[in-house]
Amino acid sequence: MSIKTKECQPGHFYAVGVGPGSPDLITLRAARLIQSADTVIVPRSELAKESLALITIRDLIDQQEVIEHVYPMKRDSARTRTCWAEVAAEIATRIDAGKSVVQVTIGDPMIYSTSSYLIESLVEMLPPEHIHVVPGISAFQATAALLVEPLTLQEDRLTMMPATDMPAIGRALDTCETLVLYKVGPRLQQLGALLQERNLIHQARLACYVEQNGREVIFRDFREALSDESHGYMSTVIVRVGRRSWEQNTAAQEVA
Image 1: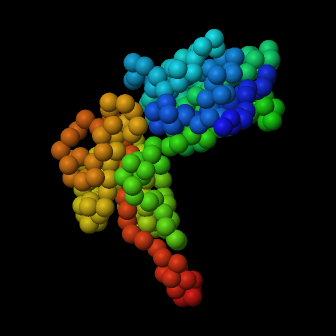
Image 2: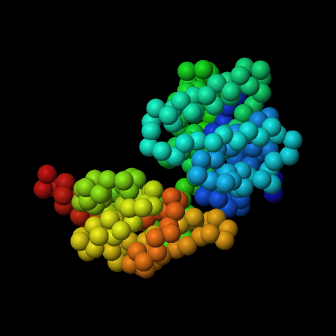
Image 3: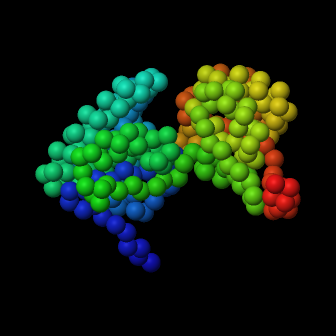
């Protein structure tokens, strides 16, 4: 069976999600766009020795020009936007010359991604019909699949947020049935204390470096994760707060 998929067009830009890190989770469309691009932009955090995105797509690289851009990890919006505005200018120069450019990103381009900063600048430089986004599998989706635990059923509400504000997390636990937290890192102990206080620690799972060969760690018992301080930036927590059935939702609407 042959599946037709899109190729890069001259003078077009593509933000391409390549999934959580395993090459076999790259979509067919993403793979073909990477293979057919003139230039491939790969991001690398200033704290990393190698670009995880580049490692993931390495087998798809042949004659393409590959440009690695190091981006800041500090919580500095101005510096981050300036960094990606400079990359956008480089891309626009190539697009104006009729080249096709792909920027790859781990996960999905629209979820906590460097691509979003890049597109912010590119919309001021390129026609909108020349900017494309290709979705990828996100870490929270891959984590749920590994756990074989559904994220939502019936009327369940799903909330996603960074684990940077404990009071905000506490409020989110009151208004959803499933809470997904990214960027857990150094706040693990604070989060554990909050979940213990809310009697939810047994319903929390933590995954690190999901689908990254040789690095993946899954904690089905969140308490075990608390004894290990080595969890990195690429950690995902899923808290199953409860369930909201069709009947509960109907009853709530009737009361309102």
